[in-house]
Image (cartoon, rainbow, N blue to C red):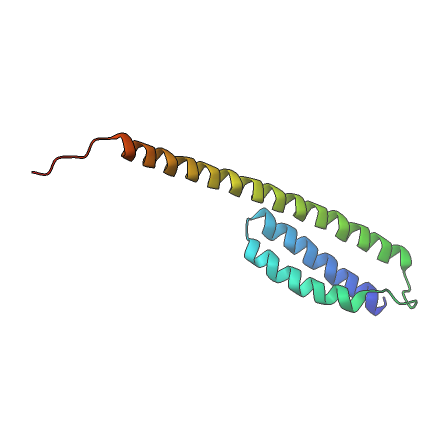
Length: 109
């Protein structure tokens, strides 16, 4: 196996790990893995002509793309859920302020 095939194998492993961490909601760890993977991608591409197993490389690249799409979908879902949580929190604060604005002050004793 050539160096590029080995790098692709590492990139695939990191992408799978990113998916696992994203599934667990560990977004900080996902960011760490993205940085590591980016360095490997830069070292790997463009692919050189010495790749012995082009079919393996093509399969690895397709698999990386598939896992990456799933990580992106998990990120979109997490972003949507976070937005909903923020909206709910804002609504609660607005309701509390409105209640305070209309309730009479409590007399001091």
